[in-house]
Every structure is written in C-alpha cells, then in structure tokens.
Amino acid sequence: MAQTNKLKIFNDPIYGFIGTPNEFIYNLIGHPYFQRLRRISQMGMSYLVYPGAHHTRFHHALGSMHLMRQAIEVLRYKKVAISSEEENALLCAILLHDIGHGPFSHALEEKIYLGNSHEKISLGFMKSLNDSLGGGMDMAIAIFEGNYRKPFMNELISSQLDMDRLDYLKRDSFYTGVTEGNINSERLITMLNVADGHLVVEEKGIYAVEKFLMARRFMYWQVYLHKTSLVAELLLIKVVERVKSLLKAGSDISCSEPLLYFLKQDGPVPLNEDLLKKFAFLDDVDVLSAIKRWQFHDDEVLSRLCKMLLNRKLLKIKIRNKPAKEGKVAEKQKWVAENYGVSDEESGYFVFSGKIDNKTYDLEHQNINILKKNSTIIDVAKASDHLALQAFSKTTTKYYLCYPKASVSELNLR
Image 1: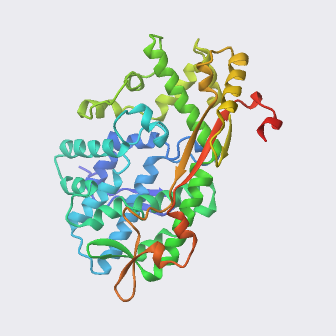
Image 2 (image 1 turned 60 degrees about the horizontal axis):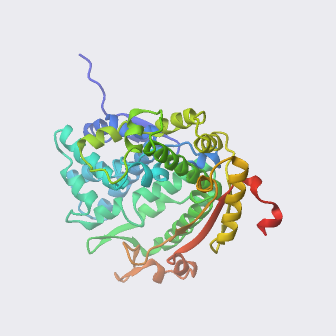
Image 3 (image 1 turned 180 degrees about the vertical axis):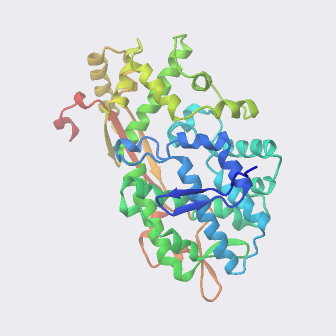
C-alpha cells in the first residue's frame, strides 16, 4: 500500500518553497485549528486601502517558521547549542504563535473575545493541541511562555527583533506594494548571535537593524495606522457595539452560531476547552456574511454602518496632534441626528473621536542589543549614530475625529 508523503512544500511568493520539516509539524499544519488561519486576514481592513493586502495569518505563520529554520541554522553555525528537540519546539512555537487571532486579526480583539488576548488564546490552543496530538509540545509551550532555561529561544519568538516581526514587515510590504517597508530579513538573521543566554546582533549588522526600525515606523504610521484603514476598523467596531446593544435590548440578530455566542457575552469569558472549540469556528467569513445580512436590518444605525463598510462609503477621518474640541464633536453629532433620523445618543456611532499611539522601539523591554567586536553588549539606540533611533523610543500620540463627509464644509475643517 502506498504511503502518503508527509514532507510537503508550500510555494511562498516571498521566500519560495517552504517545506514541512517533519511529520509532527505536518500534522499541526493540517489540524483544523491551524487551517482556520486561512480565513483570518493578516491586516484587518487594510485591503480597503491596499487592494493586494488579502494575505492571511496562514501565510504569515508559515513564513515565520521558515525564518526560524534559517535562524536556527545560523546560530548552530556560530556554535550555539540547539538540540533537535529544541529545534522542533521552536518551530512549533513560532508556527502557532498567532493561532489565537480572531476575525480581522487585531481589529476586533477587544470586542469579540473579552478578557482574552490573542496570545492567551494561542497558548490555550497550543495546550489543547498538545493533548489531542499525544504530547510532544511541552517544551514549545515553555518557550512560548518564556519559562524555558534558554531566554534567547523565547526572544526568537517574541521580542523586538523576532521572527514574527521579520516576516510580517517583509510580507505586508510585499502584499501592499509599499516598498519602504521591505526589510532584509536574511541579512538580519545572518547577524544574529547569542551572548549571556540572550539574543544579540553582531556589530556589523547595526545598519540592518536601523533599516528594520525605520521600516517598522514607516509601516505603522503609513500602512497599519493609515487613516482609511483606521476608520474602516473603527466602523467595524461600531457595528459590533451596535449589535451587542441591540441584543441586550432583546432585538433579533441573525448570524452564525459562533459569532452570536461571542456577541452575547457581556464580560470576560473563561478560557477553557469549550470556549476554544467555539472560537475555532469563528473567522472573517462569519463577520462578513453577518454584515451583508445586517445591512437590511430594521435598525437604521446598524443598517447604515454595514452599508458604509460594504460599499466603502466610509466616514471622514481627521488625524491631528491635538484632541478635537468638544464643541466640534457636538456640532457634527447634531447634524447626524437631524439628517440621519437617529437619536442624539445614536449619533455617537457616526461621530466619535479618540487617540492612537505607537512606539517604534522600547528602551525598557527586550532591547535589541548589539554585540561589539570587543565582546561588550550595548543597546542599539546607544550604539547607533542615527539620531532618529533616540526619537523612535518615544511614544507618538495622535488624535482622530470621525464624522460623515456631508456633515461639514471645507471651511469648517480649517
């Protein structure tokens, strides 16, 4: 009887062929929990700005695993001890590091799975898979949690220069067509080393790190926090908030069972096997199909919000360095109430303000350390002669105001 070849390959547009190193990894990729990542978008609603940004968490997980294999090879070449068991654990951990993401990735994280971050759910899935596959992932779980005796292994998975970031910057740059975000991940990996048990970058790789940090800053402000992507995701949040409000008031809401279960939750949900099974059936398809259905709902607010998203007739968004004045917000909310036929309270679904912030480099947590030729270790911000790196360690905060385009004249915007 013919045997099935478990060592499959995936043709990735970024790295070429990505192989499955062993049968255990092959079985993880084939599991329904992991296959679900094919239906979770990597960049939320960014495809409304960048039409090519339809790649998924499945792509990203495989790419991260590919980079991890390269990093292991480089570190072994430099006499860093990594056993076969540790190699398999690292590959499992990086492959599953994002398995806990919900619909549209970060966009609905605080609205759908209350009290459980995607990292916490990822860990829950890892423990569940460990049980269902007969063990073999205890070390991977320890590494993922940061409890393993070799700190650099956790840093390869979760740090300011991990395989996760090295893949998503390069991948997101490729699929959006934003070349400024394209980093040389191979060069950075080649420069990795381990000193005192922690991950470091050799001194000659400092310019590659600078480029990486600059690319990351650019991608966050120009792509991930692009104003159109931002307002689309804020509208998506408003849709969920409205549905939750209607459900609480006893209104009839039609959608898939998994989505309805999470929409009905009004507080933190205990993370257990039952919740994981429900969550495993939830993906982008549930949300999109529900929005298509809700556009015909009797509720004017919900219907209008859904049509805005589906037809890309989004709210106008202004991003500035100072918060919007309360008077301006009230003025626009009054216009909405009068012209949309909604209450003053309901106008808040169409006119709202808030803030966004980002820090490109954190000087206080899991620093990117440079290993100098004299064997001393120094933080990249101090080792670099690039003045911008010091500024990158400061949190940048911006404020947004969203409102319907027809509610204000250009004169009022000045």
